Amino acid sequence: MSERSVPDWLLKEDKFDPPKDGGAFLRKSALALASVIRSVRRVPERPRGPSFSPPMRLALAVLTILLVSASRNFMFVETIGVALLVLLATFDARKLARTLALPLEAYLTALAILAPALLWGQTRAFVVVSTKTLVTTLVLSLLIQSMNWNRFTCAFKTFGAPDSLVFIFDLTLKYVVVFSEICLETIDAVLLRSAGRNRRRARTLGGVVGTIFLRAQDAAQEQFDAMTCRCFSGVYRRYRAPFRRSDIVGVSILIAILAIFAYFEYARLCLT
Image (tube, rainbow, N blue to C red):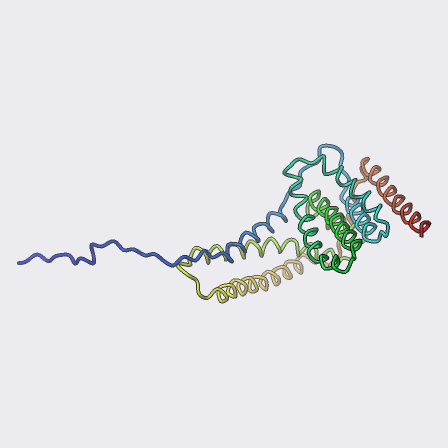
């Protein structure tokens, strides 16, 4: 009886080299979602010295942004900018980089949008609008870096914000994290199961979006049922933040900002 030989093709090593496809779009989307989750779940560092209460921080930020936007005297904008630079000088390198990320992006965007104004000789408008954009976004970034997102809800309710606004803001922040995590897990599953070049990227993206949409419907129904079972009437109790000693300094800063704004505006009227 003759021995059967093993075919040569069975002895060869299988080589599977799929075409390269980095999935750059999905990976960039995953990185963007991860950054959103980190920013929302961020826990701000506790300041070393005394700190203002959340309502006082919100009042300072909103008042400064409104006055800088409404100011017609550029000296007031420069004064606020110098005060912010003094505050930034006390930050370490890591905290300074996080704080300046958003303002610098907004400033460069404003410069790009206002660049045609230079061709028409509107140099003042180019400088004033871009500087106001930098200062206001810097104030907003300082506010974001100093408080958790749930503190914003409490601060809004302290100033008598409507319940519907607080409700939408609160649920939006919570479900941004939930749906971002679901979307991130779905993208990771797509990347792990894909082999070779994905020629149907639009279909893949549509599947991810459709999955998130269906999960959002289920989450909305579950949220509605849970609130109905707990007899939620849509009324938020007003949050009363304890008045701190440092808030006296905050009130003094508020009065000083208003006084400086009134002084520069009055000086502008006198010169004109």
